[in-house]
Image (cartoon, rainbow, N blue to C red; front, side):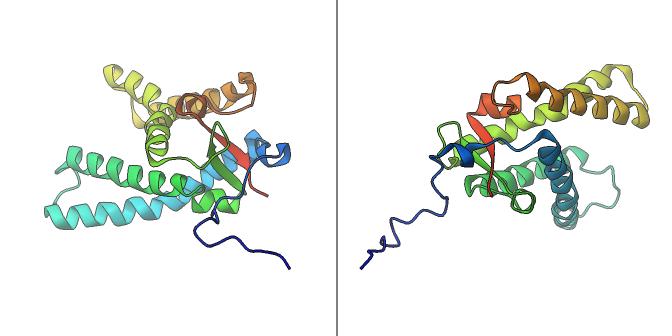
Length: 177
């Protein structure tokens, strides 16, 4: 007769002790997940923006712009911290990718929040670089796309092929198949 673990001892995250479960997903798969996450976030940003506009009685798109940006930043922080703490966002489930700590444990909320803040390295450098030059939106988009490509390819120079913001946050992406 086999004994079952009590519900309090069961973990929603499977143990990640063997090497097969710690395999880093390919860059192509991680970037496909990244793109899919962006499409799903359209709904989160839309609903959040609508809620902010309704609550702040915004009549023009440029009214309360800084407030909206701060609200969206916090909304996305809550979204990602919540899901990464649980191991996966919806896009990560679809692409069979899980985020864990560098030690192979589930990610704490503090570490997930740190990962969120550091993940802005995907966007901030080109955006900050364009501020003093007043570039048109098409050039900002091209510069941002170029930086995203460079940042993604830099993972090739890391021993475990992880993104650098994951290394700095003490997290890693692994295959969840």
